Length: 403
Ligand SMILES: *Cc1c(COP(=O)(O)O)cnc(C)c1O
Image (cartoon, rainbow, N blue to C red; front, side, top):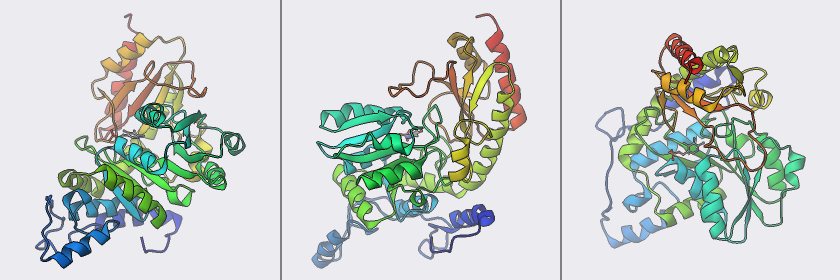
């Protein structure tokens, strides 16, 4: 993080080098390359002076008590801060907790929040349920709204502009820098769910104050760990986020952190392979007669491509497919069920391909996300692209078969 910004062409390689060398064991692990899993609740002090001193370091990576984290958590915190380009990361037990913890930190009774219509579903439910019950009002806005339109939605008590780009299931790319400028002019904080962008979107260079990442996805990378990261880039934001995480007893198991550290070591190569495969599959689908539109921001001409090109240095392998309006839901379900390499299931970012028809499962209340046809979300894994395409071809044949 202390390095000067590398020239654009070298950025990926420099990132790969940093991911390989950050958070290593150093000289403290008998010479082993990796840090060990450090488990513990009680931390013993040599004397009372040591115990009294420890309590002053709640905002630092300092051994106080297990729930406040230890060496294994610190190693992953440092890696995630590096990935996001921030200064501090708070690890939490899931990606959803990485959404709810900063919302509780930045909002209080009487406040108002702006949230994109395309927000991750459980985040929407938290706003309309728990936050509403506790006196916090949310207005859902069209994720593609321009700065001038957003400005009209601000109220004197608007404390948070929440963003997520691209949006969950519908992949709208938000003009985060422009929207953040409006929020800051109104004294609001900007939160962003950066799970799709990972390191391709550097939130703190684009006006974001607090970045949320479901580490469950590509950082974990192997569909076997649930974790979240809340990253900030200022001491002021760190006090807000860390204070609430401690108050809530938020904690991430060292075993899970250790798994996520392993995932992080190969993040860059997995992402590069999956980005390439995702684009190849998206392009193939775009040429199919059954498909009305492919919602993949990295495809030229796709919705949001211009902003994606301006603000992102790459793409992950999660995207949407809109089928032609005349194709009924049952046919799309037949397609999904006929696939052999794609499992039907939630989550993404692992090594395996997934398919998820979302028609009837997605809530939109601000008028966004209407495409006419049935929507399917695909996650492209590490299988050979030729095999993935052959499988999709087979699935599309099943789509045409009489139900
Ligand atoms: C999956 C996901 C989350 C939540 O992560 P979990 O670890 O499954 O709780 C949050 N935001 C986005 C955009 C996600 O896709």
